[in-house]
Length: 113
Image: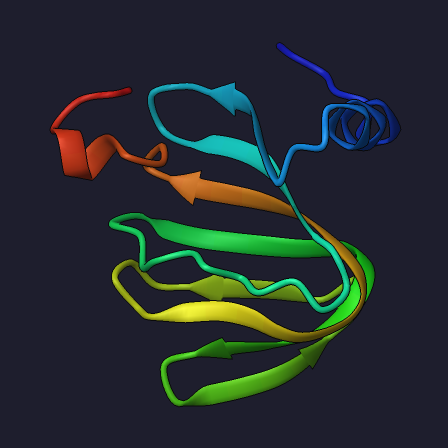
């Protein structure tokens, strides 16, 4: 079993000015914290893994394929693998927990990073 403090993860990410911080990687999934400043572009590319975002801070819009949705704390978003997606119109600094299944990069590399 592993446990994490969300407050500690956010503080550590802010202290190190990290946009992306992976904090868990096991054979079936990986988890990380994703942060974007208000007005900052989200330059991510589609992933080869299914992905779930849980917005914990901030306000923005989110686009996946043809669908757009306003997001705020508590928004839970599922994005199927290979679908073009991104946050946009970020009006308040955004922080999201991100879950990849299988682990991020696993299907690109044929093995874990």
